[in-house]
Image 1 (spheres, rainbow, N blue to C red):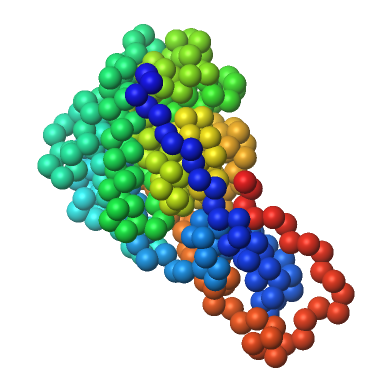
Image 2 (image 1 turned 120 degrees about the vertical axis):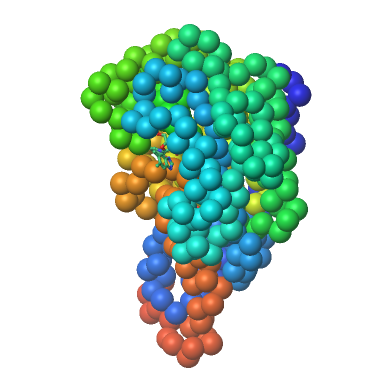
Length: 360
Ligand SMILES: O=C(O)c1ccc[n+]([C@@H]2O[C@H](COP(=O)([O-])O)[C@@H](O)[C@H]2O)c1
Ligand SMILES: Cc1cc2nc[nH]c2cc1C
């Protein structure tokens, strides 16, 4: 599958990063006293290539929606038709993500990548197929579908950046996608199915057992190709996670920071970093999901999430819950007075050096 190649990913701006570290030291607070917010401010400056930072002008959420054939195994508490129903709910503004996006001043886009049912024209513009194979016994996608889905995600990122998006937030909607995500997480991090399996949207004990078996069966097929991201997407993934992978890689190519959400966006991030090394420098982990596999994924990504609220919803809600912290971090760096401006005395003892910017 050589038709999916990404150009070299640029690094966030080193000069702006250094200026931001120096500016943090000049602001009217004990050095380092804003903790993680200081690192985040530095990261925003490096991504924007400017210090002081600018407020985000057009932050955008993209929710990637798809159905998954493995839903037929009874691995979810909810029926598959909920995927399309929730797409409608997201479009009419009634979902949690709509509220969280409004709270954070973020515009919402829903992309149907592989929903079983028909969705309205503008949403379905990048639809690759309907659903996916039952990953315990057949491939999720064909080779051509993997390429089409990655390219769809890439195009969506380009459309968003060309439309002025200066911060991207990713989310997902798809019944049974935690079975797929847990399988990919196990293949990519080496954790066992029993450690990867979670309750998803709330499956009961019998469903949990079916889910564990499904992950184990799927992993048997996926593990041999775990080192090859596109083949892993073909065998054990789905069009949504493939599109997310392309989207995350392309956002980095386009120098646009991204806030990651829960488990599915996390496994897509691992795959995207593999396809486009260095892309992870452009992402921050919004939250830690209650799905157990997310922890292993975050560790492998080397990302400490901003919030840990026990969320297990998806749709981008964890990322959106963290977004006001990101805005605060940027504004503190950009808008606080310096010691000199405010006529406040600086430290009498040289403060310890600031920790570096967000891991890079
Ligand atoms: O983001 C997460 O970590 C997360 C954790 C649990 C559930 N979800 C959402 O719930 C749906 C999948 O749950 P399930 O039980 O059907 O696999 C899907 O729409 C996800 O967005 C998402
Ligand atoms: C109602 C509902 C909303 C969701 N949002 C993301 N996943 C979901 C799963 C269900 C079942």
